[in-house]
Image (cartoon, rainbow, N blue to C red; front, side, top):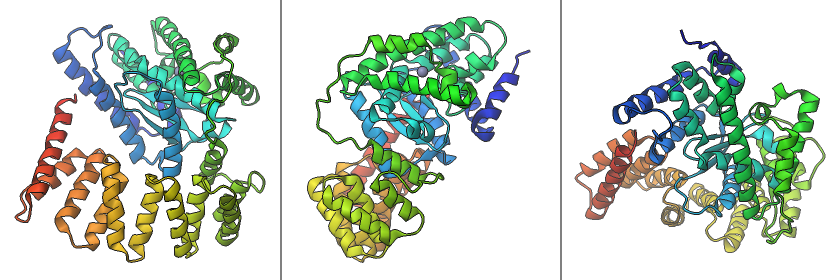
Length: 470
Ligand SMILES: [Zn+2]
């Protein structure tokens, strides 16, 4: 009889009892293995999953996390973490995956990589990091896990073991569910033969550190960030005990690990003069969390604290000063303009958005906000103009289509509205809904030739994507 008890223990500890994870993973597990057995009788070391299937596993788990409201979706925060990841990835040649970085609304210290390039970092880890280099070192480590296919290798290796072990690993791959690779295996204590697995995952950790630090330094981050973060974790565990730091369960910080990273350090001199907005990012993350911002800290943090406590006009004064001093600081400008809108000062907000767009003409978030402002102040044609431009520039961004739906609604353009709705569903991971809408558009008597060919193209794309999946 297989021993499922450890698996449930892990689930119970994870995310305050989201047992749904069991179902998610079980369904992925059953369908992937069933498929794999049909095609490849050998479930050993050979790669059972191709890149597309990997991406599909990652996407499904991401979708579940998203639907459960565990993913922080504020666009400023989302953009920062993805920009940081993109900087690391810029040194990776021949990239075969679309990476997605996201923040998990959880105050514990943790980070994890899902197959296919979905990389999550807990808010708790971000708030405790002391610099962008430290946070980047965690992302670099997780990117390395994805590139080396560690998660997939564990799944494949364990497919020959037994179902319980497999499920335990899958649970371990998930956010908070014991987290990073093989955590569950190492600490869940499944019966029999796990020593080989433990060594296997320990090797993975060293390998991910090695590749991670070269990514980090290659992308002009300070490699010391990795050493510092290990040291910070070690200190934190001294105060609170390892059991409170999820990340340490999977990434035990040993002296050896620190010295290996130290040995790879290269002298660092910041070659780019790019501004470092990490402290602003941290302040904003704290602002969106349930935690208090306190009364001290940077002036930006103080302004956010004022907004949070309902004192928006006083916040505007402070933000006005900051923005005047640093007109190219998009964090100051964006938050200032949003706050002006909040206090009914639409004209001034519009002015700030337009100033920002002169410096950053393609800025998605500023453009979206300006477009919404134009829409709510009755300038629907001007809003449509911006939305169309964004659609060309960011065809994969669902927020753009969400806004287009509202605009076409106001303009009584039913067919175009349906089209935007379909695009929104397609990009949100609901291909069935998208297909239904596209088909309805094709059946409409009002359809013109251009729209018809566009819809057919999108249907074909959805079909291609489906046949590539498991
Ligand atoms: Zn790791």
